[in-house]
Image 1 (cartoon, rainbow, N blue to C red):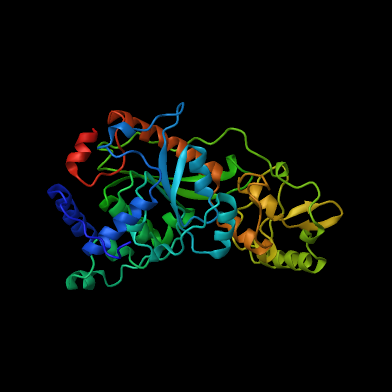
Image 2: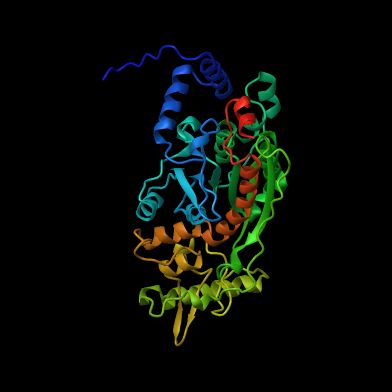
Length: 405
């Protein structure tokens, strides 16, 4: 096979499109063409392109087929939620090798590594970009100086150096119709609200309708876990602001004792030395008027938030035991507490207890995410039907976009 490709007789409209895309993505021609070919080779499932009417998706019952990518994937909380609702994952990225190991066991693929080292053109087209991105400090120091030097503008100036910048860049280049993001509740108040304002301004600059809501998972799982969910719709696809609403929580609240193991390993029971230390520590802070201390869980209620540091001493969630010291949750109980499927055959714990605690403490609650996805799908379906069952993917040519309507 020849090591060089020489393509002749490229139609004028394709040459013009290539030039427009090179200018838009600020790539060299060879880099753009290789990225496009790689994307075509990877693309196995997506809503059909508008110039392929014979390939329009066939609905299965009430389901609308859609594709998604899973960024900062962790152990796949978003993936479970999206696949449960009919989605097909076409790309995933997670840098932590222990999380990659769990992800491989659960989904039979190894996520790509560090998203900061992956160019957006290597990512297949997709309908929903899902990301539980870490919150890093946003710095606007030196913005005026950079602007005066003509170095960076807009979101590139205010978000460069943060992981949100990578999401914004992918959204700018790939134009997914929907963004589904999750972060800690304090994202809204971080840096006196400036971080949140930067995120909202960036999404507005990228031309997305933005909806956000803080959701407590306690109605889906027996754990207080408040997280901000951000759902965005591409204004170039959804011309009018969508009638999107976040889901209402279930009326019945689950109880902690519903997810506890009947005969946990004794190794999870606290030693007398550690239990004494935790009690003394809590008493010292109580005398100072502080609320720091261990959390002895109510078995008929819900727990505190499970954190990634639970492996250290487990003090935030301790399970009372008769005539014994309290104990930590087991990794399997943490899996249940987070609402992941309780199926050791399909979802085995394949890492150490320390890594398992970290993974579950950092995860997205699939049951909550699934409800948010179920609220997104009617908006997607409505637009799909409005376009006479045409494409929802952002098309590179305006005339093709109009042809899909």
